[in-house]
Every structure is written in structure tokens, then in C-alpha cells.
Image (cartoon, rainbow, N blue to C red):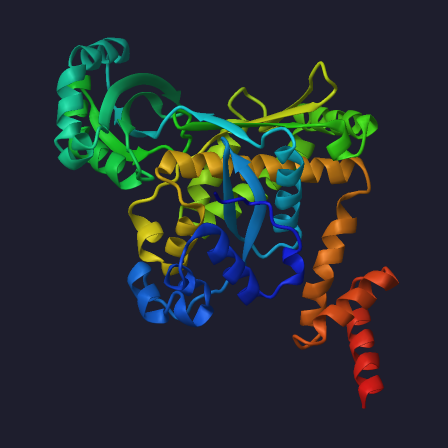
Amino acid sequence: MTTSRWSGTKDLTPAQRREGLRERTGLNETDLAALEPARGLSVEAADVLVENVIGVLGVPVGMATNFTVDGEDVFVPMATEEPSVVAAASNAARWARETGGFRTSSTGPVMMAQVQVVGVPDPLAAKSRLLERREELIGAANEVDPVLAGLGGGCLDIVPRIVDTARGTHVVVHLVVDVRDAMGANAVNSMAERTSDLIGEIAGGTARLRILTNLADRRLVRARAVFTPDSLGGPEVVTQMLEGAAFADADPYRAATHNKGIMNGITAVVLATGNDTRAVEAGCHAFASAQGTYTSLSRYEQDADGSLQVTLEVPMPVGLVGGATRSHPVAQANVKIIGPDSADRLARVIAAVGLAQNVAAVRALATEGIQRGHMTLHARTVAVAAGASAEEVSQVAAALVASGVIRSDRAEEILAQLRSGRA
């Protein structure tokens, strides 16, 4: 049985981490080969993915450990350039292991497309006419993708809305679609385009925009974890974290940074698996404003035992088929590491990582401050920027941390001293 509890990973080389990962997951060398830059995404392969390719950009892929999601241990690849993100998520996952890890639930893989109809003289009657022909519209949408319908997905419903705009009253029809293991943009966009003329005819106006909405509020994922006072550093830390979370609930200025921390975790896994980071980020931030003001995506409470109960609810439109998830070799390797049996399972793991990232950040802010751990890890990046070789990075970073000044000019001084001492 796989266990994600793995201490001492920071002291290993990348090759040793990959070997340990193979031993713990049962994956073979071929499964993980693309994680080597020379065997990952080539310029030739990239030229097929997007237009006008001139090269590829490497992003570090770290491995978050210690995660238990719905009783199953999992290693989680995270693609990010920001120091401390992977370590923070792994630490919070370790704290959550004491109480069983992360529990999740979801509403299923349901996406929506919108068809905008303008020039409708009788919007209320148009809404009724559309609903009267609901089954006809659902059938027309499902003719677009019979394979999806055969897999148990397809258009489930149509929802007409009346939207007042600066250009008059528009009738907007939502196509509600179960997209199964796809992210779903192509499927719902095709359905919207194919049915738009019929929708416009029934409504008595002209169909204009036909496109999915990234506010995927019918594709929600929820994650929850319990953290004991002892795991966090004591009852006073729980109190401080509750106060910090209340600040984020009440103040949009704080909520923006609070949610950015959640997205540090979410986006890193979305990117690592070849999914659409912009779609997920847009949906999450729109969802944070759903009640009319921008607020925290996570919620913090203290239970009767004094433990911290943290919950997160976010839209999560991610897939396992189509797009870069199937065509990017590194994304394929990262999906194999997680081993999800469905897009829904992948979404649940991603939500757990977002929650873990948030808890680690709020704890740091409520206690020693965010910079202590972040700058310690950032010291290695500063050392590299100053020109330190692979053999010199650890020494320069340690000296930077000891000096308490983590800047490029100080790194250059330390590096010069180190090299002069060897001359």
C-alpha cells in the first residue's frame, strides 16, 4: 500500500527523489522519464500545441508529500517557480494526517455554456417558449457529441435567464452539460454554437455570443481537514489563525492575498497536470465574489474539542482527456504520479492541496510571519541568481540565512569570499 509519508526529501537529489517515488508508487522509469528536461516537451512537440513556437519554458516540478485524500495516500506534483509552496503544502498535509487527512466531496463534472440572444421584444414570454421546448433543445445539443452521451454525459438541462444590460434586455440560455472526464470547453462550446440559431429562433431574437462560462458553479469541489492544537503549536495558535481567517472573510484587501495563497497550491497542480490555469483561477475568483463582495474561499471554525476545522469550496473545471493533459509528456507523467481514476478525483486532490497551502500560510502569518520560512527557501534562488554553481548553492544560501540579509548583493559578497578562500 502506498504511503505518502516521506521525511527527509529535501536532503535528496532529484534523481533520488524520482527513484524513491518509483519505489513507493510502483511506476516505472518510463512513466517518469519526461520529468528529465531532455526527455520532456521538445520544441517540435511544442510547435504542435501552440502557434509561432520559438522554444519552451521550464518550470520546476516539486513533489508534495504526506497527503491523504479520502483515505488514500497520494504524492502530488506541483509546478511552480515560487519557493516554499511545495514545503508548505507538505507540512500542512502532515499535520492533517493525525486526524485522517482530507475529506472531499463534489457536485460532479458539470459545465455550462451561454447563448446570448439580443433584440427579443418579449423576454418573459421568450423564456417560457424556451422552457416549453426544453427537451428539443437538449436533444439538439446531444446530437453534437453522441460519444459523450454514450459515456453517460451530455446536455442535462437548459436554463433561460433574463439579463438587463447597458444595451437593453438580453435573453441568455445556459446549456448545462455533464462533460465526464474532460475539462469540457470544447464540448460545451460546440453545443452552444450548434444550437444557437434554434435558440434565437425560439426566443424571437438574434443569437450573438456562444461560449462557456468559467464561473463553473455547478462543478464545485469541497475539501475539509481537522487540525489539532498540538499539531499547529498550541491553542493560542488556533486562536490566532481564527482571527486571521476572520480578517480575510471581512476584508477584500486581505481576501485577495489569502486566496492567492490558496491558488498557489491549486494552480501548481493544475499546471503540472496540463490543465487550464486561467480557467480555474477565473472561476475561483469569480466564485469568491458570488455573494456581492470579494471574500475568502476557505472557512475556519473551532470545534468542541478545540481543534481547527477548515473547509474549502471552489469551482474546479479540470480534465484527464484532451488538451495538454494528453499531449504534454510532463503532464502525462504527473497525472500518472497522482493516479486519478477520473477528472473528479483529480479535482478533489487539487482542492485538498489548495486547503493545505492556505492552512500553512495562515499559520505562518499568525505566528512567526510569512517571510521567515519563505526567505530561507528563497535564499537558494538568490544564490543561483548571484552566479553560484550547483556545488556552491547550499553554502551561499546557508550563509545568507545566517546573516539575515537575503539579497543578491549580499550573495555576491558571500560567493566572492567563498571562492577567494578556495583560491
